[in-house]
Length: 316
Image 1 (cartoon, rainbow, N blue to C red):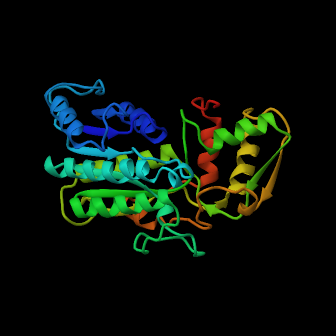
Image 2: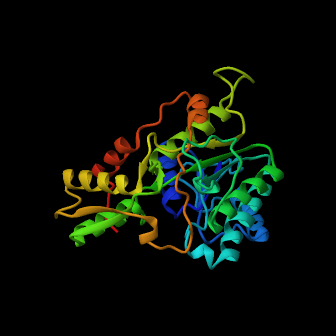
């Protein structure tokens, strides 16, 4: 069985949706199980492995947890500058506890990380082996979480991703859609470049990664598991925040999510002051995971269009 940590957040909800759809047994938890508290984790695990607790309907007799997916994170990038302890508690202590729990039960761990572990002072996509150099508190806690996991266990997959959006929770796409329906113009920074990523695509890749490991029948070749370690996943292509917003407007108008005319204007990061500095360039090279899984990741524009026209789209 799989334990999905952070099942009430945007990414966690998508995992829960896809796991249920594929009838993969899982148990999901949100804030009711504080992963920064080792004792509470132990209590939860003992309860879960002896009986069903917030489990999917497909959990029957075998409640032993053999996979943990950690989607829980303190992601308020600006607030983290003032709440560093709180960010560290969730992002570092929580991640370490998840790793220790997995190791103690011979389970495997999938941990979601971020492009913000890099400083953005490059102009070519980051590969997994580039040294980390975070420039804000959020990025520093996520970078440290990776180190803590690597020190605590060996059977883990750390997946760095970027500019996530998805169904059921506030995100950049919903924020822009609402603003464009309310205002005559919006200004969006044009000097931060990355890759918008649809949660659904990330979840599909992680499930494939898990299935490949679970079904491995040899140490090498096509039937082997993907090696444990760090992988990058984002939709292909790159864009500035301004490019992203323009595409949201175009697709929003096309599919009736935006019902009025709105001018999308570029601005600089200096004009839009934030407490946390963002990387100017955080595009991720995803060759490693594409090769490991034998997949071709969709472009960010294609996935954005799929998201906006979906029946699951809703405004926030």
